[in-house]
Image (cartoon, rainbow, N blue to C red; front, side):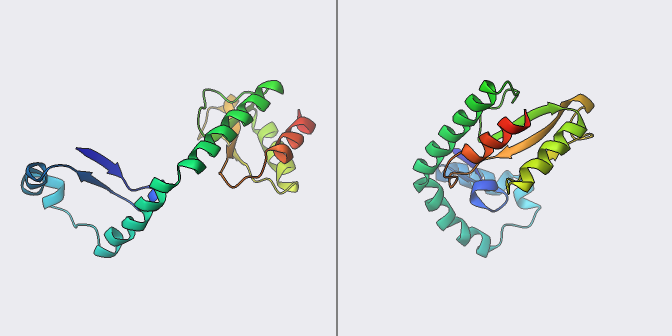
Length: 152
């Protein structure tokens, strides 16, 4: 059996379960949320098929994204900047004060690098940060790293 979420990478909502016929029958006949809620639209279900194929073929992009994340964290360490315990392609650049986070956000925006400042109440007062969201289409990190070097 496997439970497969349909959010984010699949650009949908909900989830689906794969398993043997006996499990399918059990869930259909005893699953309260299945019995007492509206099922997914057939259009949504049909749209998941190409999304599943796309996600399965995207291994090279996932590996590249992982490498970009590692590289960015290495650069941040070299600059003495904190990224917390991030190990994914979404890297928080923890800056401390709201003023510093907004200054970094504005300076990066001037260079056409879009990184949102995350401020209270979303994070504690002294934990303001930028959210650096990488994607596998980024040619290189040099523009971001150069901009951060100037800001430090």
